[in-house]
View 1 (tube, rainbow, N blue to C red):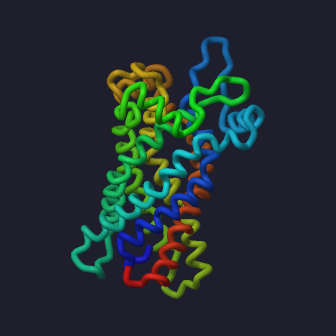
View 2 (cartoon, helix red, strand yellow):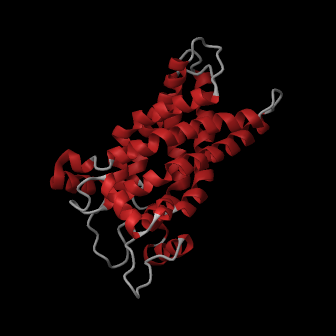
View 3 (cartoon, rainbow, N blue to C red):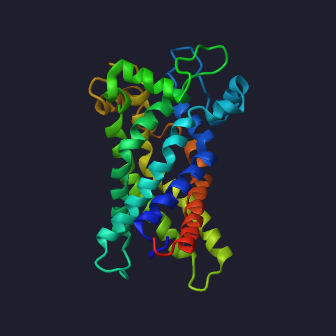
Length: 298
């Protein structure tokens, strides 16, 4: 990332990168949420989905390709400000850590700046994730739909439990995003530093951006996946299921399914992580270069 770019440019470019992420990665995100939240089969019953491919196939059969994009309105509406705030937080974090403009940050300092950005996004991310997950787990076909869309879901949640219901899972979201964001930005900077020599041409830099962005996405989810599973279950459970929040979700999950359940849905996540986050950073870098050209003093 350009060290000469202001946090404002990070904000604007991050929003554009976020839109690229959702468009590229939402289908696999839907598969992930459905695998994470599917009910445990009773003795003698077959699991609702046999895995990533089975979930993908059944979704297409019952709902068509549009079923893979269920709930996309929520992240697409919120993703520009979410990623804008995330990248702004990272840019601001770097500025706060630096003692002078020419200081090169160490890897732990990059991690700290990235983790700082994760704190910023929870206020928008938590309700958006709650609505997205509830829409994603709705089965298609002839099954009655509780929510007709993003606004209807938000309205019903507010009617059921006020603003607290809409923000259900906020603690789980911040526990996921703080360490995951630190790993995300640190990995991107690290991989790109390794791949880009001093005399790199534009094509080589673009390839490095794609690879570094993809690696950053994978690193992000390796760290954030367990908290994401807990968050998805908490946010999609009926009111009163987990009175003590994440502690109850974790306890029940350990008792019934064991530690491996913390990585349920990891296959679609990893399939999605590379192209979605490569798209994000390509979009971000293109936007930064454009802003540096049209508004060099911004």
